[in-house]
Structures are given as C-alpha cells and as structure tokens.
Length: 385
Image (tube, rainbow, N blue to C red; front, top):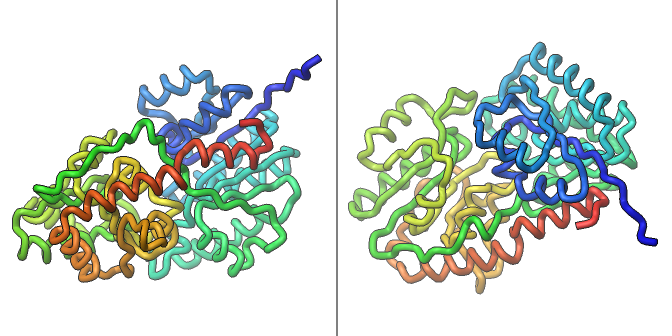
C-alpha cells in the first residue's frame, strides 16, 4: 500500500509583499502543490497580489514591518506578532528571507521548536557595502544580531545567493565552515514569462532598471550617458525605477538633472519591465550594492540582452566567465569611463549586441532557470520536487 505523505505547514516571512510573487511566486506555487503555505507579509496594498495569493490557496497573515526603517519600537512590534504567528501555526518548515525576517525569525523559530529552519539572505545590503552612509553602530549591531541568529544548529540550513556573501560571512565569523550553508543562483527567472526577442541594433538604446540610490550606480550611468551623448547624439538612454527617500537616495540635484530628460529618459516605476527590455539593445547595471543576484539582469538575459555590470558581489555572477560564451562586460565599480567605453564598444560593434544577447539567454537557461533554483530550494527543505 502506497504511503500517503502528510501535508507540511510552511511559513514564509518577508519584508515586502511585492516580492512574494515577483521573486517567490513560482516557488510558492510549487510548495503549495503538496503542502500548505502561510505567508507573513507587510500589509498588502495591491489587490492583484492579494487575489493571486488567495487563488493559490495561500493563507495570508499581515504585519506592520518596514524593512528599511530603523526603529526599535517597530521591530519589537514585529517580533511579538511573528512569535504569535509561529506559536499559532506551528510550521514544519520556516522560510524567512531578507535581513530582518531572517534575524528575528530564525531566533524565534529556534526558540519555538521548529524542526526545519531555512533562512535565505538575498544579498547583504547596506550594512556590508563598503563606503556606505549607514550608521556604523547600526551596521555593527546588525552583524552581531545576524551572528546570534545564524549560530550553528542542526535544524538550520542557511541559503545565500552568491559565493562572495558566503565568504564574507565566514571572514566576519558570523558563520563557520562546519555549518549547513547552501549557495543557489539567485531567485531565478521564469523563462516562459520573459521570452526572447531580438534586440534592435539600428537604433541603440541602453536601459538601466534600479531604484534611484547611489549604490546602484545611477550617478555613473548618468555620467557615462553624458559622455556617449556628446559623441553619439542619436543613442538613447532609459532609466526605470523608484525615487524614494532613502538613506542612500541620489541627490536632489542629480535627480533634477535626470528628469530634465536631456541625457536620460526617466520612466519611473513600472509594474512590467518586459516592454522596455524589448525595446532596449543593451541592459546596464553599474551597481556596487550588495546584491544577491540582480533580478533586473536575469530578466534581461532571459529576453536576450547583453549586459554591462560591475565586478561586484552578485553582479559578477551574471556575466559568463568563459570568454567564448561571454554575454557582456564586467567593469570596476564607480567607473563611469569604463562604463562609457563598453557602451561605445556595442555602438561600434552592433552585431555583437545580438550575439552577446543570445549567449545571455543560453546562460540564463543553464544557470538561472527558476525551475532549477526551486528544485534546489525544495531539496534544502527536504521536500519532493
């Protein structure tokens, strides 16, 4: 007689409701097939997200967490409410991602007797970015909390998205070499949703998709675009992303220069980047922010776009190191001259835009297919795929 496996209760905790579907949608879908998924998320303001989660039969619980806000009172409220949810749900598997859910959630899950704890760090962020303007006391306290949270435990399987993060956590003695640590290739990309489209090489357009913060390289993109525009006035530049008040937001002066539209066409925030990637020739991300693996680059690669990005943690993962399979260029951080030079290469060698783009798609299929990532994640959670 065939043994009937019991449905497991899986609790996912995040700091952004939008990320649930954008970054974890396919994983949640797969987990929900044979289990019951619960999500503890900041208040869902987008009806479409709520409707989709309901359609998937995911049980939604909401918090008042603000992942970017530094507030002891707010964090304490979150800790109390999360402890309550863990005690009520009694999950078989606890899966928090991003720093605050990982730090607080992992400690609470250990103390509440959860048997399988799988925290995922999707990039180390400001506290680990060199030269950031984060309060050093806050950064050091965050690292201490992370060390306490990730202390070795047989129930704990830590998931990271690039090897640089793993090495840094080892070097800082936040984790040790004997711990159960897994490195997966980012969040993956749905290759059926982001379909290949041959880039336009007759009219060259560069596209950057990022929040308007310094560490994403917005200033370097603007400077490089200014250099190129003076020499090739017909080349176009677009910038997609939110401009919000943040500890690392670009200056108001730079923002005003951008929205003038003389150099860059600023599109702002969009829900669906596919039409913009479709019109772009090459996608650029000169980021030195501590990325996991930048989603914008994965989406662009899936649509067959060459990439120019920085030789920095997370970003370097997206450029194939095999020179015969190269899908783009890595440049030094904060170097607008190097960025302009690689842009000019594609302007002068337009057929290469198509060739590099095709290699991007191959690389995305081999390494970043969301189904491959999700298979790894379910194995880590000791679930059947």
